[in-house]
Length: 469
Image (cartoon, rainbow, N blue to C red; front, side, top):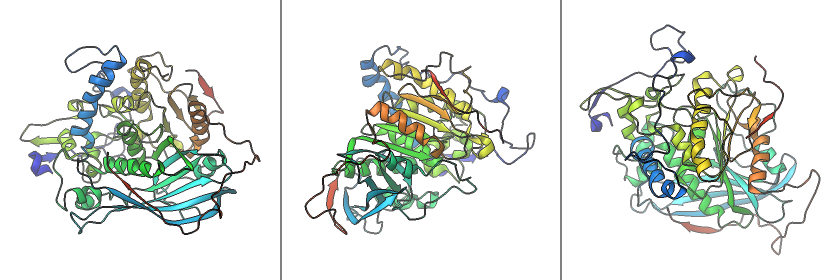
């Protein structure tokens, strides 16, 4: 990719383990964190005109922003991505958090007849509560595609939160959930770019600079999973959310920005490439994403912004035509919840919680323009200070809460569910309440198989103060 772009040398990324003052150490000094304080104006067209109406946003400004993200940051999805054929491989009745559920193991086979050497079979588990009456809202979660009872992947060194697992909380609240395997869509490494859905569409060849990276590929997979949910009577396909933590938090935000059918999003600890502004110099930097360990997440073109020497000279974060606040703005006016933990519990300063809060504030004008409520913060994003943790700004469609846990969003799940229930007008069952769910004659199927073909197409709420270690 460096050869295609004419890059001969990349700048090294920040070293999060080096002590302050050591060569290459990440910056954690707030006074040095904003070398480029003036971010692109989310409501100014490229020709200088101000966006003052919703019509101008939808017809002109939003397409400009989306195009820049596709071309320069996350990459374009090819127009000829093959169809997906969904099969229910297994249906079981079991329990989650003590509540009876129906769980389906679902496989999406991507048509690889044009290049049989690359096979892509998307794996997911779809779980809905038995005690619900009618279709339920569903939260789709990036992860491992785990059925109930199967071990779930965890981030190395992550502390176990005090809150119950997110799956238990969702089922108890009358929601369903999907565990979607990202690895079955696209590998999380650069070597995998000639396989997975990216490799299949390229017939095993390497990418060109404007083509999609893994984040956009995972987002594409989530959209295809939503195609399946639209055929499942137990799921309310108009009230499906998308969720992820860390790299999957980045993917959740990208998914929400580019797939308008998702009703809401929970973005957990997403950092650089997610809710953290590229123009901030605090913790992780653009150069960490253009390095060998993470470049596959992004479009090839993104490498330009980490170039020290190239035929075009050099570029840096300030040359990127868009930034994180505009990615958040692409989600408007749909409900968007930005979540972080605290460094003391493992949600490291590396992620730049303060910068992500600034980006969320800066996205607010678009939510307001479209008739939705933002965080209710009156300060300009340049000076807006992150509220204390466990202080939720949850009155609007744009929401923020830093919990007192670590690198996870399960500690925020109960707040997310209450916020989402209000905005989606979902009334969960009271504890112990049971309703009769209509069953097909003969009861729930076991081991059934079905096939589907799809195409690509405020005021703060306060809680107890945080622990500080």
